[in-house]
Image 1 (cartoon, rainbow, N blue to C red):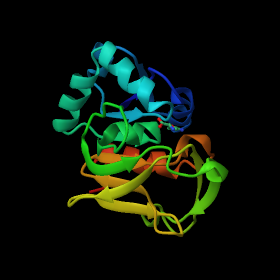
Image 2: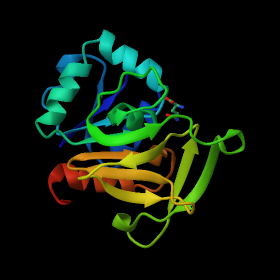
Image 3: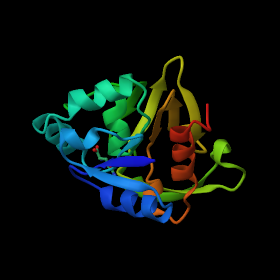
Image 4: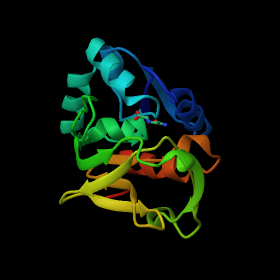
Length: 193
Ligand code: GLN
């Protein structure tokens, strides 16, 4: 199995480190030819405005969309989730528009700009997941065909899945809990529907 991690900007090194711990062959992706022969792709957190510009400048945008439409599994975390969304109100980010969700950027007020919380994610089992949010977006709306994987106590949607696309508002790569990455790899391997 070979997993690409989009390495244009942001927290790509942390995802690569987790994949190494899980003994997965990993490719940092900066150029279109590096997308060939991947079984899955991770789009990390960072600054979605910068990432969206860089992938356009480096001719990655169309290729990533084509591959996703042909079934390439993608995990988008934080800024990565913003890029996966179809709609981002009041924002000039040009998303890939692959998931039928509406995402609001920087959705948590000042005091909660960054926080950690024990999140219940039923698909990962009973033990709560230590979810780290950093100037995080939230999922405002999901359309048909999108499965909600996690909500905060106030019902805010913070993780979702549509077909082979997975999105989290938080940063699973910043914890020692490898379950979310394992869940993605199971999806890549065909173990999750
Ligand atoms: N606030 C960032 C954005 O809108 C996302 C933050 C993150 O990825 N940690 O792009």
